[in-house]
Image (cartoon, rainbow, N blue to C red; front, side, top):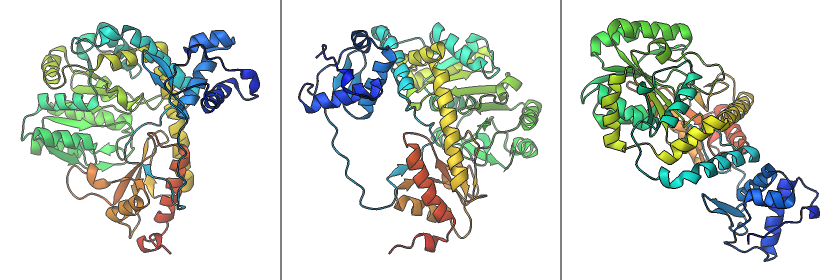
Length: 460
């Protein structure tokens, strides 16, 4: 059905909406059938004498409605009319998963079309991208990594830069290189659950350090180094998961001073470092010779890329690191790395990042408007809230209460390196959940926080 040509004069809506409407109309009328291939976007734009972007937005809108599907390297195909969704039978919010700390997903048709265009361009070299590649990234990918890292005041030599299959895999490689079973790794008292999982898998002991509003206490760090003889300090210094705090520059300098004085390696998980438009200098810029820097793309572009850039403290440290990662992962996916490189080079990554910042700020503004003051910690650019529960709520009761209404959140137990977890929970605001659902979930949460567990759970 490559000759399908919609009559845009039949609609007074914006042209991209008219295209989606006419696809639906022609499916109903039998003029389009399931499996039919629609004309390529550029060809249809030429035929209709309109901008390519307008057609691209129309196809994206049709895909959002479930009318068509895009297949990489093949084109856009008719799926049929979506089935009507059943109406909810209760007034409670729809099922909302607020457990994963993800950025909001782009929903602007122009941006999505631009992202798809980048994928189509990358797929032109699809056969080559299906081959094994050298570990650590091709020269073009390392150039893109260097350009991206340069925005964080990082200018390492290319032999210290590695393109890896995601931050999690990178941390596995670094931890296994620095420590052996039974060794100690220091971290924040409340830390990223993935670091806990990795340490447990490798047989390492995580020791959490006390924190104040500025992060870990440098004196406590020095004392822990003397007592535990740790192999490294793991930190998530910007928009920390889960507390959302950012370590200020003076505290960063104090931490680096202790690490340098005591010969301690630093593993810097800079997952959220690119989210602030003008972020603080990373630890790797302050102590490049001590720091393993991990700059994942999951939080600033998209988790599905499974790509992260790693800076080793010195070139020779990268050799065993590369061997460790190669043994476990062989290589990062050439296809997704090529897509990341394309988006960085053509500015799409910056556009995605601007969207993430704006949408995150809007969702944090909702939280500040809806939730009772003083019940949570947050940053205008953090993807989550750290809810500190008022008495008599306990974390298990609060998480259970929210789950009973279809709202998933995570109790503080998941983040506690050692000791007693606080009565708190992490609530994420991003991912595929739309802003309206986030609002409904926050309103329900606000009602619970303003009442006792018994009153909040009352049903008639």
